[in-house]
Image (cartoon, rainbow, N blue to C red):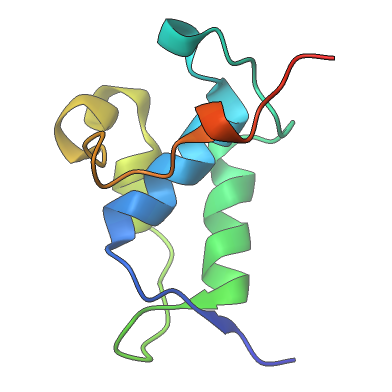
Length: 91
């Protein structure tokens, strides 16, 4: 099957998945996907290509950006990130 092409910056994609697996405590959003960072890295590498049409590779920017200690510096800023707040509604 063909991979999906991510047209945005890599850090926006990785921040989205980081937030999905870790939640956004500041906005009281719990984790929405049960997965490890390594599973998400494999998922991105196996299912996406970048905006240039090139594959994402293991142990690259994707891996680095998914690490909690890198989220502070590599995280997509509020204006650039996908706002989960508008999608998450507690039941």
